[in-house]
Length: 471
Image (cartoon, rainbow, N blue to C red; front, side, top):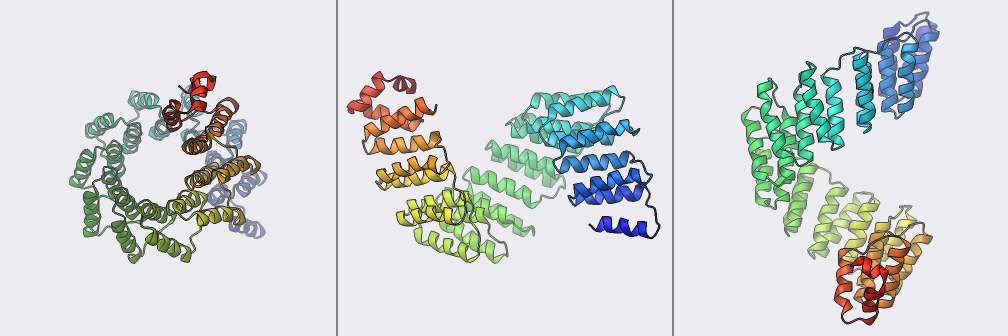
């Protein structure tokens, strides 16, 4: 409220703010997220004898979009000309950029057409917003068409344009095409920046072309573009995904040599890679190094380590780590509760602890998900508690959770495993006919394996329309 307080004092002292002062105050309120006060001040301008100018309108339109008031922003835009204020390229860019960020790229294209009809020339910012919007939607044909159209309208693509386009191509797996676009940059007199190199490296890493990614990194360094921590993180992630852990660890050492401080993402990525290749102890050593360097582990870090320890049978270390997390007062979310704590306890054979954790969710006011129920049902079935699993499955709907395809397949597989064919067949019938779900590949294979020596399954598969559908 400091802005309105300043304005009030000005009026008391007989000082009449001009449009520049009003615009500055409106902008300040918008930046602080106080859109209601900004709109009030915008309306106050007219009452004080100052009609809002194009800067006033651009500021309030942007503020309304940023605060999620899209309809009101468009309404203010329409009122703009009615009040004798002509929109400019910045006005249209503001609307187009915000529409694209909200995935409303077709609406943005209508505003681009309107601009052209009114003789307002779009600039590089206009095109960058729309190309980015199409790239985010995966509509690379449209993005390519607009990228090429820029030159035809005497709008020269800049580094941002090329980076957006390279990144969009990479995200769609078109890394060869992205490289070709990257290679044309010097011909157009445009230099790639750190973000261009990072986008291309990430594209190669996604495609598991780690050698090519490393080459891009080397080109970047050779061209005098100093890599950020994020650049190393991309490359480390690529090596980890390719299970080349020694190479990934050597990059961590290289960062330290170059006096670049690894962040939590760097360490978490390496820890996850080491756990995946069965080296959880090295992962724990990195965790200790990370903490000694003053970096605070987050839920993701703990999730990675605990998951690695559970899956590789290091139960004592997992429990110690869990205790350490509790001492640091880190509050687990539902994903952590389900995927790490409950599932981890079942892996560790601690049935009662898993059940206690599940009950504690409701006490702590944490809402479980359908997946949480599925994990519990699977764990109970694994422990041979089929009756309890079935009761929990039936209770889901009472608790306000509709079983999904995964839930049905989990419980059906459990009953097939213990050869309770009658219950399994009844659940399949309910799943397919009642809910419209299908058997997954595991359920289908189990049915095929049992068909030759289980009369109930055999009869179901031969005679049931559901059986024929699953085949």
